[in-house]
Image (cartoon, rainbow, N blue to C red; front, side, top):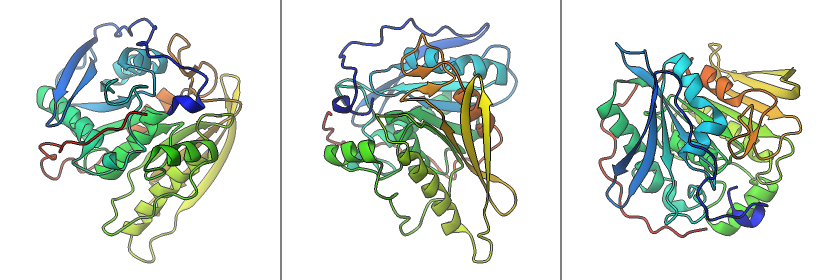
Length: 333
């Protein structure tokens, strides 16, 4: 999914799946954010019957070859958001930015705050905040494959904006900075997560899902995502307060086994969850088979991510988001 040379599929067509339908009373509409260098289409789900106060916002980043409708259908996030009372935004990668419609997670031009695709997606968030009642302490980002890798980048570059990150079948920040490095990281797993440098960002709580039979993005990459979260967190902690705890659970949901590792901070706060899914390939676990890259059985990744998200808050925006992003030359995959 992240790179068509490593995937069995190959198509330039838009998603053939039926558009996702909003749950009863909700609305699912299309819009566009206009940035300095380029614009970005997105769709927004607004739940029905939840008026009166600011709502959490979940940003969902699709994988390669997908679009907002396909991703919403496959993950079922709109239906869960209707139950929980959340807004859900689905930014869409443009074909002229990447012909396979992958987010450019492997390009160094998209690894920094205020630049490239992280700035564009943050701009979508700012637009939704301006037009809807959003609880700024409860904004979250999740994604699949290339979208998962970009979600990790957003957590790294905008830790004051996103209260938690969800990554399904993705890679750690800095796993690659060019096409060749991307293919190596996807095939073998990144050699090591990018080190924490200088004024390290705080460790944004992160939940990770990965199938142990994923032949597109090596499962070792998920360990790098978790390690980066822990490293960024501990880098901010005073000496003597670095005691983290780790618990492991083996279980089964909907006929599929899984292993879950939970990392907690000194106060018992959950810093990270790492789910390894038995027998799952490159697919969103617990999804709807009418969407692409889904595995119907096993733990419901969408429900578990939403559960994880809603228990975390951040201090909100400590200032305005970067007003514009400079032009970035995008090299299509």
